[in-house]
Image 1: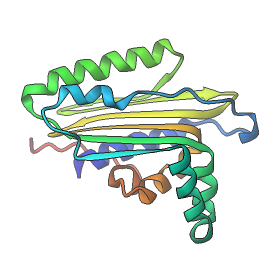
Image 2: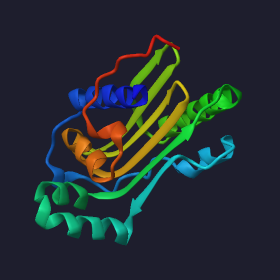
Image 3: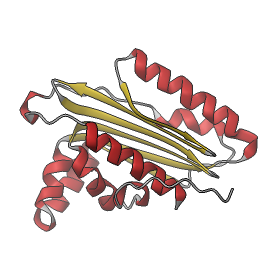
Image 4: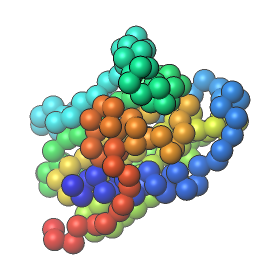
Length: 187
């Protein structure tokens, strides 16, 4: 649960600082990260893996249209949703931290803005945002918390207030219940 609280706190912070704009002004978003690059740092496959894009994303939009028109509208503005959650051990934590830092630097060089950075006890949270014409066009979340590492890459026109809907639709507990950061001091 602590991983969820880290991600949720970071996304709330993003919602608070995100600009509001005319969605029609958005340009084609940048792609964020290739989350498969993290696979080589772990001895086992991710515990959670979500890869929804292209025709599969359009299928999800159409399936949601009757049940939840607001969700369908929000998803129709996205190009991709990717999530990876891995077991994180002491033996690979340093390597994962270095890779997350390297990827964050790469995002910065490509014009992404780091909007959240948390370093608290055993929790590292970084959120990067790409913006085009005052519209969020990409969001990357990297969380190392306790014995889990979670990476989220959302590409497309994003209303931060709607991020929780993405979590609920794809059963991603880490981003579905709002964000409340409370570091776990029991570790």
